[in-house]
Length: 278
Image 1 (cartoon, rainbow, N blue to C red):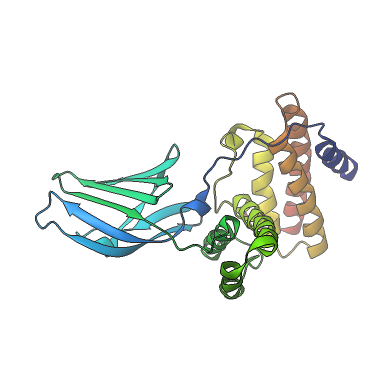
Image 2 (cartoon, helix red, strand yellow; image 1 turned 90 degrees about the vertical axis):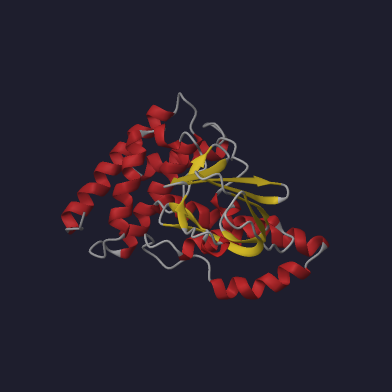
């Protein structure tokens, strides 16, 4: 099996498999955070304009907005992706969120005709990838599915935030590259355990065996009955195969999926022998 995994890895490195699909322009890290701005109520019993801070949080694969601070007896709403936007419907409340160059466009409509509108912004440090890293770290802190400690430490990020704000020129470029690498690691970790959606919109239809392997792998990584070095070795093999599937062209998908099946059967057998819980 190790020879096959190495071969797949070399194929990826040499370009034998197609490059990964282009990433969409927005990820959950573009939405999560504390959004602040003026909110205007119109067509309501009491029209009002106020300034509020509205959080958007992602927890264990679900994303939600809390409108409590907006007033009007509003509260938390679970968000559903609507193309490049988000929406929600609960009782007589309909919500629509859209990211624009100005920030976050919030629209809430009640069946009574009452409306809430606002353009909100999220504090930034002037380096987009570092803002992304901070958001992914926030999602990571809300993820209870991790079998290992989080990759990012919020206290460390808070200290670095001041450095990011002051950076310019070459230092800013260097920090941007570092934040990109770290953010990608956290995103991949969260996608792997199911705390964030995969950036590839077709991932759910790409290789049923590789998707099954993901679940079995998560099971064995949580199982302390399996020696740490064995779990680590298996995890490396699984990561290579999942990356191969994500980057595979149509002709290569069946080949990689067959390898995922063999790996899944091996991992499942180890889990069974070790008495790992489901």
